[in-house]
Length: 305
Image (cartoon, rainbow, N blue to C red; front, top):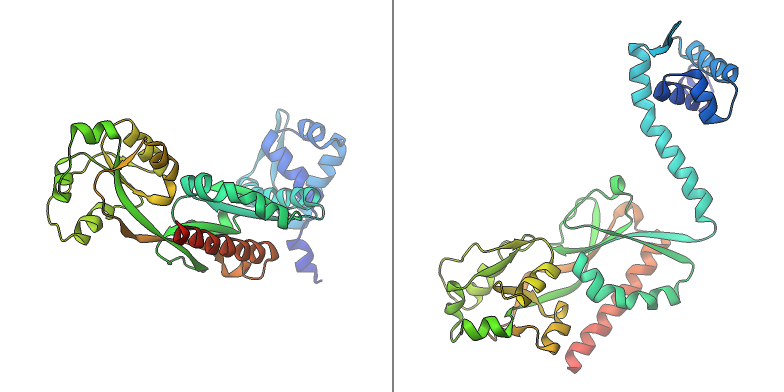
């Protein structure tokens, strides 16, 4: 390593000491935080200043104050030190288990995926699953996510989208609402309060177009999660366009009924997505294979019904 390379890579001890003094504004407080003597902290910071050839603090009788160069340096290294701490913690707690950080859709995750997860855990006890909720496209690296369940189109920069299943939707409402708002023709729905999903802005238009019905679609209430739409329908607030597999229980119990018996395949479909950099990551490979088996089994169940 050249002398320049050494100067550009200060020791983590020196960086930690500098970071602590910069945040706390005191050598003594930094010494307490790092369980070192004040003299040790002072020597670490002085050595760092000498290595960089830059004065990082102004020493006064009232304490220490970051110089302009010191403030810039403190801001620049804060993120790097945080990443090192996180990586160290991950390495210490991971032990011998693999971990999969999985982003799931709220309703899909709770209604369809979670009841099946015990099967994956039984097959792969060596893999620890960590769940996060995400809607829409996000940055895998920034969010620390290895894999995601996505609904929409197979368009995700830098990632591979594997098709899982289509989404069959039908207009539903509460029995009481339908009783007070009879629907004899599909056109009648144009005059009722329609509930919308933010992630499916063209859902209702697609449904009406499948019946070759043209007309003005009411704006109505808008929701971000299907669970909220379900509860709004049950409460009698209007008619929601819902994926059948997410409301099996409500249809079976009679809490919801079809407002009009016309089912259509939604323009949106479900995909499992993983960044190209994680293509060979064993937990990703294992989860994708298991998930595809579960989807195949689910399709067979639908046919059997």
